[in-house]
Amino acid sequence: MSTSLRQALVVVAFAVLCSVSVTLGVVGLTRAPIVLATPPSTTNPVTTYTPGIITTGDATVSKRPDMAFLSVGVAAQASTATAAQKDLAGQAARLIARAKSLGIPDQDINTSGYSIGPRYTTDGAVNGYQAAEQLELKWHNVDNVGSALDALVQQGGATRVGVSFGIADLKAAQAEARTLAVGDARSRAAAMAKAAGVQLGQVLSVSDFTSGGRASAGSFAPTADASTQVPVGQLDIAVTVEVDFAIA
Image (cartoon, rainbow, N blue to C red; front, side, top):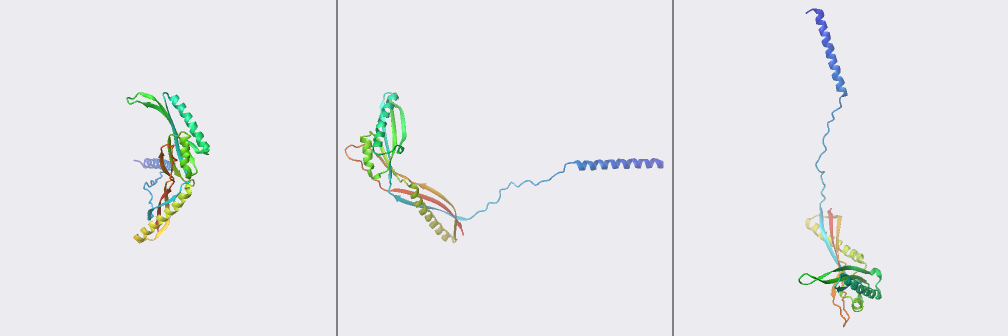
């Protein structure tokens, strides 16, 4: 091979190599960058546990009721539903009128139940219809509940009678019991802390479980010969709390 031909081949090879290098450089500059990211951790964060003493406290306060809830009802029977309902309406009107004459205002007279339906014989045949209505009356003088019931039965025509007692300001009685219950919980927690050899810390949480409010005196059969006696007695308001104390 001649010297001139060899030089020409070297020049061509060098030109091709430079072209390939330029092409690779352009591709490298225009390619989108590759970003490597660490996936977020799927593990739950560590929960800090605060040691404490959890205990309950109980308290009961007894109060004399200052109001009564009178449950009085009437019922009617007839061969048709319409006739039974019409008869019931007349009886209910008489009972409500007697309640108002005793001084019970409209807002203290509430319907607690109303029903109408067929009556059946022993073989399952319809044997007429029965309708019933029950009223709840608020009575604010517990000392003469018996005489009020007698009037509602004898002049008002009530045939189903019951009574329960309550306290008008129930929240005040519950607050008194709650204070005592929290004190009881603290005493128990202090005893537990002493037994465990630790110091009792601040209160972390308190849960309140309250019950009470009414005391039922049962149902009474209508009487006409003697006045009805309804002892009032005492009403117990019970409160239970759960308190979580920290360990100091």
